[in-house]
Length: 407
Image 1 (cartoon, rainbow, N blue to C red):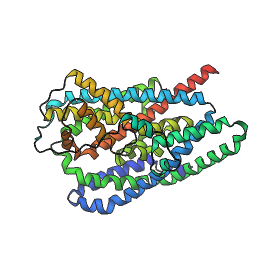
Image 2: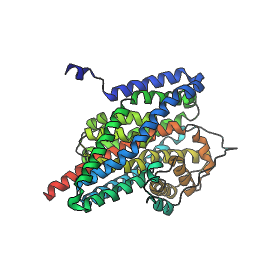
Image 3: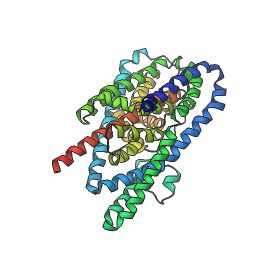
Image 4: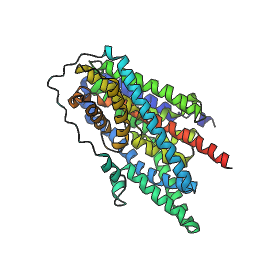
């Protein structure tokens, strides 16, 4: 028992690693190439292990969750609540980003816009994205870690297991056993989190330390103020009002996932830790296994805030005053783009290009913020995964109330 008390929590280990990475990174500002060449690879190895376990975790945990629900209507109820919540908070976040950008606009630096070059990636048409949600074979989604296709595949197989009736017991036992095996594997990998956090964050600080103090400091500060205020106010209110969990408990249990997301800037990579944190918050595995993978793919509150702040900053650099109709257009475009760019690598930049195009702002303005995009990305990923967890707590509570009424 005394040994258990002395055992350091994962959150504390990650925090120590995070502080150590910042200190080491600042000390290595003049030796960034060394950090990139010899420290970053170990972070990449850890992130590869996390990505390796994410696919089987998502596949088998969703299947296990659906089987345990034993009711297709309940899966539909959970899915509808999840998508509505994600769309509403994304729309609110982009409004928040625009408000923050306008409040701090006078403090933004005057940056020259001559000779700016930025080639925007071609956005995938929404109908193509819709078609690409559905897998054409069973191997490709897992090989490419296409989360939306894996979710669809898990739903179809899970529903099929329920529908074959009494003959499904052996399959249920097999799925649950495989789920337990991959969960245990995930626990082993997560023990390496502090090392991974240090090796991922240290090179980023070493490379960008000087840049943060440079001309974009005010824009970064604005984005981070909006990230923090949105997370503290919006998630605290919703998790208390609809989730029945105190904000203090929510953020305390979420600390390991928050710190890992900040260090890795990967929503999908943070998924296993996020699942573990929400379980400690009392969320049923059947709910978190559906809500969190979907959120890691389509929920982009942090990214939406980033769109709003960057749109105002780029407009001010080009001497353009955005009108109210243009801001409404940005809200609608960013909300729809959060689903339209789901699962696409570098979705934040593609979304920003779509937002700028929708209101006639020069796409080459992205070049102004591209240099420190990783710093923006660390904050927006943290907000994204916190929003996913908040949604899982709320949906879990609403489902429990719904079942209590039916009972």
